[in-house]
Length: 152
Image (tube, rainbow, N blue to C red; front, side, top):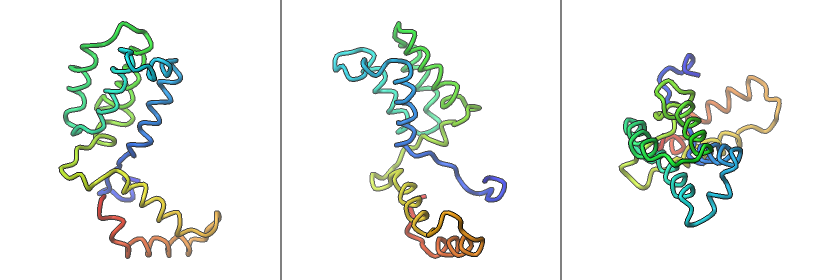
């Protein structure tokens, strides 16, 4: 994608990021701890989900200073933090913070603009096996719909 459109920005959806992290929490057997109101594990893990609301430049420092330095004595929590570090927090990770972390100055701007775009984009296709002419036509329609792009 970056080769064809070098100026585009790749951004992840906060909803899908949270789902990915939750699946990892479940796979480590931490989901029961998360639903307990007074659990230290629950408080610790719920705070981690706030990382996506920080500016990308602050994510690594926050993760290291606020989470790793106060890591709970639980192997599963340690494994979850290792997973986040390797896949989401390190600058050379698969999904570095600029992809999924954003701090908005306005409360009107949300990550849902991406979901809105995908809904409109999918509505342009009437067949699972579209011809090249249908694809080009869909792209031309997208260029004319400015309100979809206003939040990107």
